[in-house]
Image (cartoon, rainbow, N blue to C red; front, top):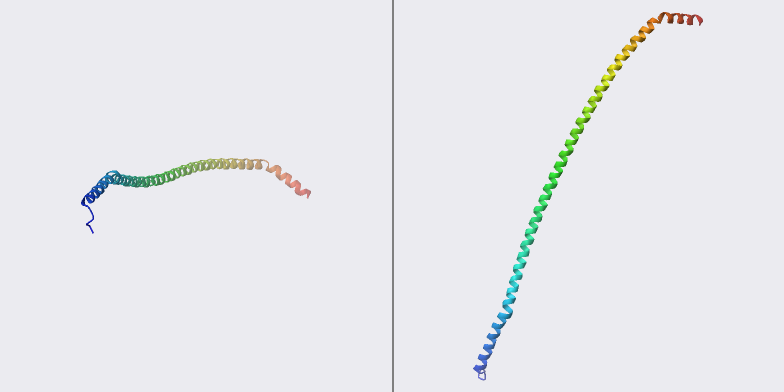
Length: 141
């Protein structure tokens, strides 16, 4: 079966096959493997960047939530302070109005007592005249 094969043809075929492997290795496989390695490195770098960005985004979200909570707390404190100040001012206004009204009431009572005394004196001064008028009115009836 192998009798009709010549060793020179077989050596030439082997040499061509080896030359073809060397040429394909240097021109096709090495650049292809290099490209695939670079692509894998690029994908890994991109994945790392995505992870870093997502971690940064989570950190930013946490910071935003903390800022939001602090802002709510500060707003609540400011509201409470404003309410307290407004209540104190209202109490002072009410107190001053109450004192003013009490003073007016006291002066009114004093004035009323004075008017009562004047009316009493006036009635006592005119009592004899009033008695005469009443008697005359009763006699007419």
